[in-house]
Amino acid sequence: MRRLFGLIALLCVAHGASAANTCFVTEFTAAPPPMYQAAMQKPLAEQTVAISGSSTASAAFQPNTILVRITCDASASIEFGTAPTATTGTMLLPSGAIEYFTVPGGQAFKVAVIANS
Image (cartoon, rainbow, N blue to C red; front, top):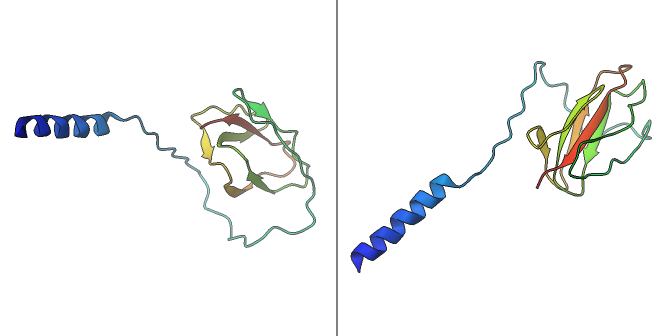
């Protein structure tokens, strides 16, 4: 009986070690901007982007936009750029999380999103 319990314990440990978990690491080349407690109201522009199994980009941000607030009602990965393509390997934004990002003004940046559960 002891051998059976030992075998079961060994299998549980081996199974836990092989579980496929993912850690999302995002690197930046610039120091963080000053802390933002809140964004100035009234927003310059607001838009929504549908989250699906393929990358969908937002409309280009307004030329004066330098700070964007992003929250999604489902887990999604996001990517910024002038022609961004999000993949499930890009920055994860968990469902309900609220994040602020600085973007370069006047460069027609967009954000792309893709479902990532």
